[in-house]
Length: 99
Image 1: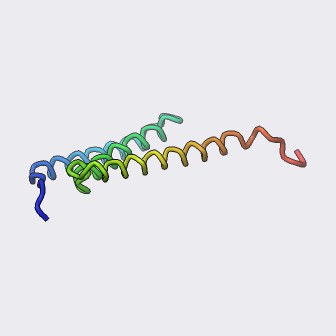
Image 2: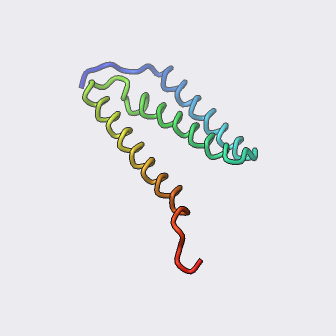
Image 3: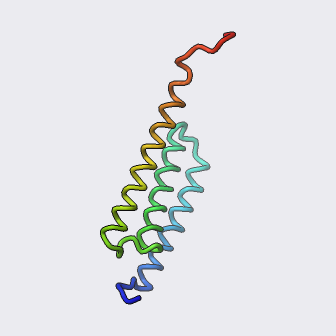
């Protein structure tokens, strides 16, 4: 399978970035940011997922169809998260029997 190949330097830089983001996640865990702690954790996890998909899974070098499938999967994930959060937020709106 001939194709574009990433250099060793790009793999090492990606690995260093992932280590730095992991260290940042651990350090943010020691700081009480209230609701911002979860936001920061999700933001850092998203950055790590983008790095892994782009470099280690070679998503940057794939054809347009593969990029379209990745975008579709991301859109579906966002739809499911939105519907789940919508259900969770509106549960307190209906009174429960016996309250």
